[in-house]
Image 1 (cartoon, helix red, strand yellow):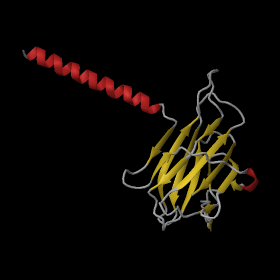
Image 2 (tube, one colour; image 1 turned 45 degrees about the vertical axis):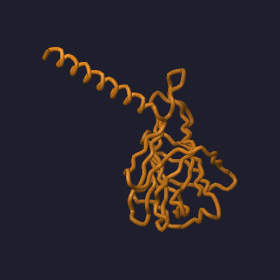
Image 3 (cartoon, rainbow, N blue to C red; image 1 turned 180 degrees about the vertical axis):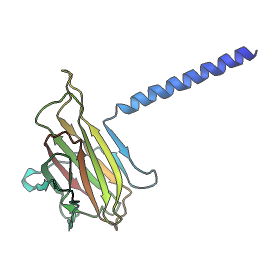
Image 4 (spheres, rainbow, N blue to C red; image 1 turned 60 degrees about the vertical axis):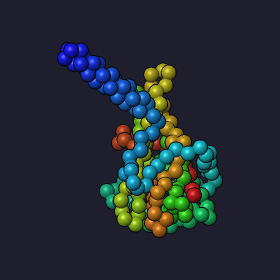
Length: 193
């Protein structure tokens, strides 16, 4: 009798471990990974087309010194969308900070493009910073897709996302980070209410 119970318990544990392993594999195939506190601001993909307007794009410039190039100017997203464009090697910040809408939301979409495809996967991390408290409130990572030829695409598109549960009385800005691979990549995108 004890052997039968032990065998049943062992089989149950193997099944649970196999289920957990299979779920972990399926979770790693998602295009984006978001790191947030469960009770605070968060980022989620939305079903909305956010279009980039190149005629109105603000040029982002990476600061290669060790100083922190955080934004010092305010932009009212309730009166206009914020289109960005620029090249960078490691990290770049938006030139402006802004309030979220009255629901505590900021919507965005970005594209990162390298000149070529690569043997290794490329990563773009979009960080939302609370300028009022000087804290990072969300961090969402996107990975390039593997192509049929075995290389990884030099193009990463975030799709449309929103950062929510933001304090409507605080200012926010975004930081874009890629690996220090000595490659220059082009960033375009739009931030809006």
